[in-house]
Amino acid sequence: MPRSRSTDPKDQKLFDDIEEFGWHCLHVHEEGDHKPFSFTIGLYATLGHPEVLIYGLRRETAHGILRMVADAAKNGKPIDASCPTDELLNGYSCVLVPIAQGQYREHLGTAIWYYEHEPFPALQVVWPNREGMFPWHENASESFKNAQPVIGPYNGDA
Image (cartoon, rainbow, N blue to C red):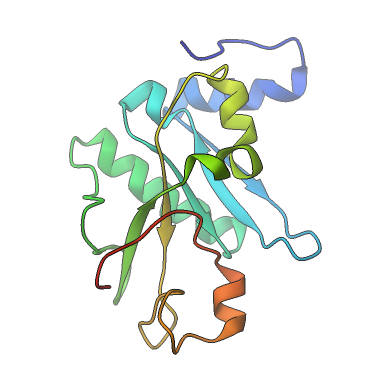
């Protein structure tokens, strides 16, 4: 059972968003070598959908993509994580990759707190560069790979 309240007033927005929208978006700013990322909190508790993280995009862009994932789940048509999808970016396919459990603490700490250390699934939205290459392609540039580290296994053909 997820946490339902906190004694810290800074946490209230998280609970208010989850109550109103079914999820909250947390954006982590770029710091040193760590690139910015955004992730959901509450999707699993309210909709049974894995939490979702996206790397390397501005807050507004990331929030919009995460909102599309959440809206699809709310409408009973969650995005299929088993294959690339073109439902999130115009003209480009994205891939949803399961986040490795060993990455949760570094990337999903507030979600761990919210779920009170109970297990929950999480996916990473991985987006391609303008040439349609994903970070795992050997011809993808190092700067692109560094902007969007892939924190889970992907064995597909995209």
